[in-house]
Image 1 (tube, rainbow, N blue to C red):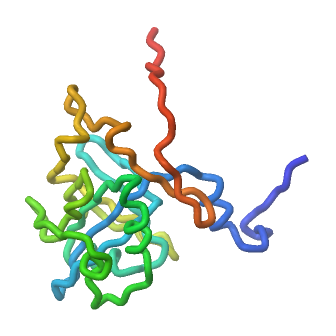
Image 2 (cartoon, rainbow, N blue to C red):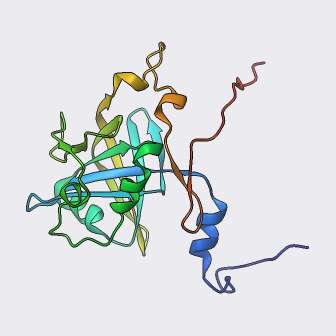
Length: 196
């Protein structure tokens, strides 16, 4: 037996909670921006991935046209910070419905640090920060996909492995699941791709 839903006949609570409970775990982009008026903004987004590697482009989807969306449209810049398990609570706190005149760094006790290449600050407590300039903003109706070209990457030395890449077990990035669930970093195993 299987239960079938369609956009015309969705579950009682709609497709959104079904999508987020099914497509999991999802990495979290902790996006920092600054408004045209100079107010810093910070919010987590779990509709996030790498969109292209050459040029390096990250994709963040904003459900609704929130402060982050407006700031990216207005300034053309944003930073994708990568949080850790130890930052889960404060990452979640930055998702509160603050007004556009509120600095989420200040409201949640986080430290903003000037970025190297963009005007938006980065989160000092986050071990990785991707500074991005707007490549495109794609309006999807009730959502918008923000595509950012990476212009600088800052990585804390204590999460770097000998090969120069972040060590997953040192980074311990959290994820979003369904409902109000957050995920801890999962167990890992080495599984090389097959070769002919």
